[in-house]
Length: 504
Image (tube, rainbow, N blue to C red; front, side):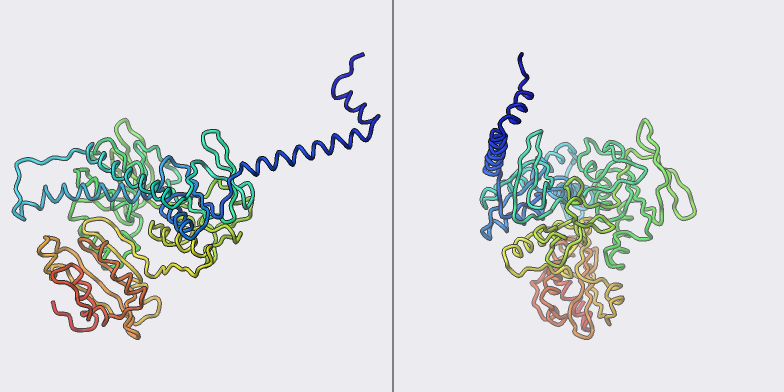
């Protein structure tokens, strides 16, 4: 009689107990050998960064500079995150291209530059945008190689608090780390009743990848993204309507700045519907028909494209954070302490997934700080000195407290202003629209805020950031010699105005 393998094994172990012990020991040894082989093949790092955006890649490089073995995991095909690939960089490239076009079309003749014919090649414009993005993403690849940061492609998920599993096209790799830095960024928020299809209902990502210039575009949201996208396509001939439920635009800006910015954008041809609420959107064969309430009036608008720019939300899904007990706020951001540590002290979080403005430079500053904290250094980010910019024309830039915030903080404020129409360099450039507004604390005379609407405001605002960082006084700025003629003389003039002795 032939006995099956399983039955034979059972009979043998029943008859010979020593053999059962031998089999058990053999199995344990085989498992341990297998585990050792797996551990030997598992990559181990001092620091593992998840996300290669402006926060993540900078954190990885700084950690490597400080002598740590570092890996940076990124699920996208290119490094750089939202900012570099589908955000800050492509949008600023298109803003610059369209600004050149508008200057040539409407302003250059007044400066004595005449031409017979000029036209827009939208395809070439988009190709240039792609080249700029590609060159910068390749630059990060080079920086990783230079600093010996290992770049790992794939989607990361925590297996336990020191181990992540990285999946890429069916391939699974396990990465072990002593410390982790979460820098997974954010994604565009869709309206509850209106999903993105990136054809007719588009996010900012879709708006930066259009194949042709639309005749009409409606934008939901008048924050920085909304007004920047509106500016790009308005310059190219698109009829743009912005629908905003608040009474004003760009609410992060000083009241004086946002009022002047709104006036300027209206003069340029953008149609604004403030205190308005989108009610519905209906797909048509050609475009979308939207219904919205503006005040007490219900209105309909037909448009080729509907751009939804109502904000962004943290992207933390799929990381396996919940199973480890890492806590989130009601806004979906990760809870961290003053050292950027989550509820697990070896796991840090930075950038758009933690509280604060969703700005690339904030994420980079936090990335550097976290790398230095892990290395045992004292590091911090001064959020009071964090500038933010709206890249319209003219640009709007701000740092520190605006006038309303300063008063609400209980400060007795000193306010000084200077208009660019009184600035010699602005006159030379033909860029005399705008204002500088400086806010000081009367008790200490320290600068607590700087707000600029004008050409190159993004380049000038850093003087205010440094003033706040170093606790500079209004008198310090008023006494600081500024080259003549320069746009930054308007900052000096505003400080002098706050002190009561403006010259112009």
